[in-house]
Image (tube, rainbow, N blue to C red; front, side):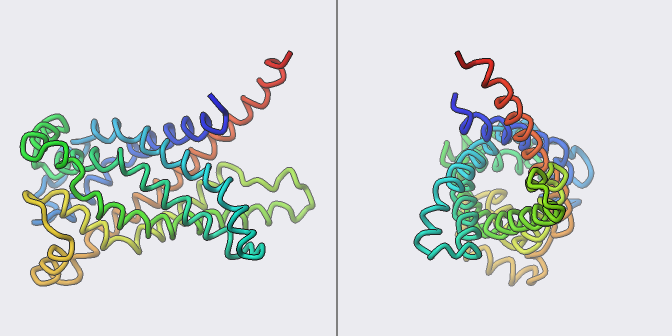
Length: 287
């Protein structure tokens, strides 16, 4: 397999699985806070790892698809945008990151949404396990039921990544510039620790700003029957007030801020390790 494909696939799989396993209890708390009826009515502190099986199934392929798409478009889209924008780097780079991240999320959601539907139904104690949730969804709605909330998830993820990744890349570039003050070009690349810190800040900011979209996504996935997002938004505002759209903002911001450090820091670490390994292995493979 081509290294340009293998490295994002393997690095994304490792980062995604690690992040979901470490922060799954925080995600459960967030889901239960956002579900109708609130935290206690949807399971409280009991079984915070309920639904983890579906998360494990979806983590590796979802993250792999995201980073494969993101890295490919970052490499190939930037030269075209830069030339069309008269090499205005201040505009071409953020626009490239926004488009690449958005495309990556659309690809990842083809895997992530079905596992998210199953996971959240188990987290909210609607079903006792991922297997039971999967069986119930398929019996009630068929495969189509696994994609309930797909459009809303995309609606949440595109603004999220449009904020997170341009900010993440800008913070990395700022850190790289700081590392070259002594004129040493070798230090221009940010370390995995830099990647973790930049990922934490970018993820936290994006998470807080997109919480209302996350609330809508959670409610749609947990609803007994399909409901249009506009109708649901009006119902929540009328019955629970505007503050309901920011339920779970604390756990969501904490989870994604800390998760961003692990996810992007882990991705950068694995990517650096694999790149180093393939670089050192290449000479020995040549005739």
